[in-house]
Length: 239
Image (cartoon, rainbow, N blue to C red):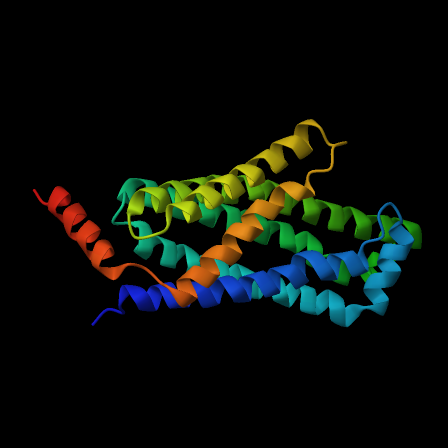
C-alpha cells in the first residue's frame, strides 16, 4: 500500500525545515566564519583554526543535498496530477541544480587538503597555498551561484503548478514563482553586472520555502482535489 498523499506532504514539510537549518549553517554561517574576502592568508588561518566549523559546514551541505533530492521526489508526487510534463521538467531542473551545487562543494572541501601541508604540496610556497585556498572557496561560491538558475527555473514551474492545482493556495504558487524569478535574476545579474549586490534576491525564495513548509505541516494537501486531479490525468493518458 502506497503512502497517502498527506504523508508525502508532511514528509515534505519536515524536509524543508531540515534543509533550511542545514543550508543556513552550511551555506551561510560556516563560510562567513571562514572566508576573509580578499585575504588568502587569513582565510587559510581560519580554516586551520576552525576545522570543526569547516567540516560541520560541509556535513550540513550533505544533509541539505540529501533533502533536496528527497524533496524532488515529493514535488513529483504532489504536482504530477496537474501536468506530468512540467513536473518532469521540474525534476530535471532540480536535479541539475543539486548536481551543480554538489560539484561546487568539491571546491569548498578542497582547502582541507591544501592546508594540511602534505609532502606532495612542498613545491608550493605558503603564499601560493593560501592563494589556492581562497581561490577554491571562491570557485565554490561560483558553483552555488550557477546552481541558483536551475533551482530558480524549477521553482517557477513549481509555482505555476501550485497556482493551477486547485489543492494548494494560489498565493503559495505566486510566492514560489517570484522566489524562483529572484534566483534566476540573481545568477544573471551577478554574471552580467557583478558590481551590484544581488543577495537580497534570494529572500523571496527563502520566504516561499518557509511558507510551504508550514503549510505542508499544518494543512497538507486537499486530498480529495488531488485524487480528482490524479484520476482526470489518468483518464487523459489512457489509450
